Every structure is written in C-alpha cells, then in structure tokens.
Image 1: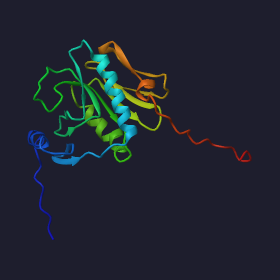
Image 2 (image 1 turned 30 degrees about the vertical axis):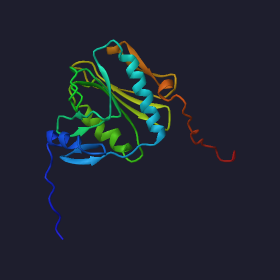
Image 3 (image 1 turned 180 degrees about the vertical axis):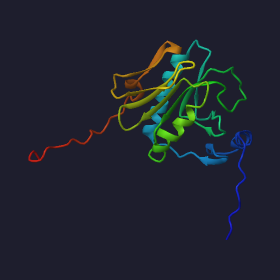
Image 4 (image 1 turned 90 degrees about the vertical axis):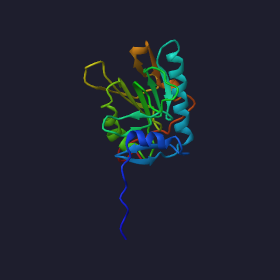
Length: 197
C-alpha cells in the first residue's frame, strides 16, 4: 500500500491552521507535530517562571509570553517555548512573538535530548534572542546561553538553588530558589567503595 505524500505547510499556513486546533503544535520541517502534555511538576516550574518574568518586566516595554505564542525559527520551523520575553511592538492579533529576547524550555522525558541539542541550535539562529534557558525539572540545574549584540553565545551551568539567571537588559534576574519553589528533589545515587556496603 502506498502512502500519500504530505505537502509541507508554510509558516503562515501553519499559524492560521493552528488557530483552529484544540491541541498545541509546533511546525517541524513543514509538518505539524503535536506537543506532549506536561506533568504537574513541569507546570509548576513554568508558572513560577511566568510570575517572576511578569514582576521583572513591570514598567518595561517588553512582555512575558506563554507557549500559546510561537517563535519563528529562520529556517522555517515554528517553536513554542514554555515561557519567553517579547520586546516587539504589541500586536493583539499576533500569533508569534515579534522580537523574542528570552526563551525558556523545561525539559520533558520525551523531548529531553532534542530540546538540549536540536531545539537549542534552532533557537541560537533567532537574531533577536539574547537568552536561552533550559531547566531540568528533576534537579536544581539550569543551562543558560546568553549573548550580547554581535557577540558569540556563552554557556553557563547553574546547579544550586542559590544561583541566579542574570538578565542585565532588565536590571534583574531569575533566581533558582523561586523557580523551583515548593519542589523537592530525590537524592542522587552515591557511590560506595567496595567493602563499605
């Protein structure tokens, strides 16, 4: 039995089509891909991040956004980060962030490897982005890529609850203690030398 060829969607077709769907989708190589649901732990981290971004941006022209708004990748893909900051001119009818400067992804078991590598590389091609933050929900561990205008990306691994994600453009920060507030972590396995067991 032959399979019917799928006609790739353009970004504009996808964004219009997405307005009429009940689920959230990303556009990957011209094909809509449904986003997986999240566990409560993931959702709590996203909620904490959005609350901190809202407070940080009060009085600024930039606004925080949720996964309901998309980010255009120059190669044509459409991504939906868990949280972000858009500094473009407000447009109540826009379905994408106009000038995203910050995106945050909270890792999920099903997409962990791709988010850490493939999606990260896509985000790095967005010209307005200055911060890419990837949050591990299972350990107090955040990967932060940042760049200043016309500078290369710099990487920083934050591994303690007293660490902070510096956002100098907004004269503020996101602290890991607040990001993970109310969550507990399983202890990491400990290596035991032979004879001590």
